[in-house]
Length: 289
Image (cartoon, rainbow, N blue to C red; front, side, top):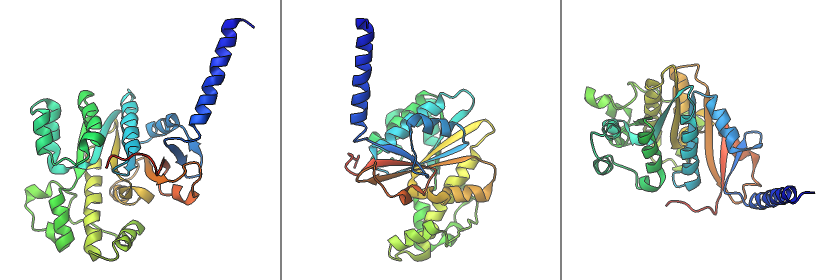
């Protein structure tokens, strides 16, 4: 056998062996509901076939944020459709700041000092925002301003009725329908041991409804939108997804959930049922806070 061919075969064997050993302790795995492990490229292929992609995250998961960034980059490479990014992490009244920053009307320092950024913005979200800006992608602030959600938690849905017409532009169209019996809302109430009562559900629902509202508002015929949110806002096709399906029909929707487990190669299949694809991260993985 020629030395060159032998060397090629040897290097190939070393690569396969190294990959298999590395795969014994993966940084993450992607599962379908049927407990099938899929590759990142398969995730991308599936995302490309959908109109709306909800990437549900754990807010401190470095792996989730990295995969969001990579998926957005790959979706943006698709010439067939315009990629739009929606983010729970920005409130609707901040849209003007995003637009001014992206257009060059204000500086990065002005944007970052005025935009009420989350504490982990620099590590977890800034790379995505900066990629969107440099790639001329539309980025949508989808969440209701926190002050209004807080008012609902304190005083109920009626608190929204007395707001000015200008304030009502930053939320879903009133009145907002709330199905208090949705399992996700009941589970949230149970985890809170009943604290907050119905107002806890209402405060969550106005966030979900508002995010759905701004997602739909920005969907055009040739658009694909990837939305970044806490997993609880889209798991089990409730939360934002429930409101979208109540408002319109016909969108192909892909949901992604993020979980942590002790061993990504050995987990309860029940943990895979909340989304179409589940990103499984080792519990020992470094987090950003």
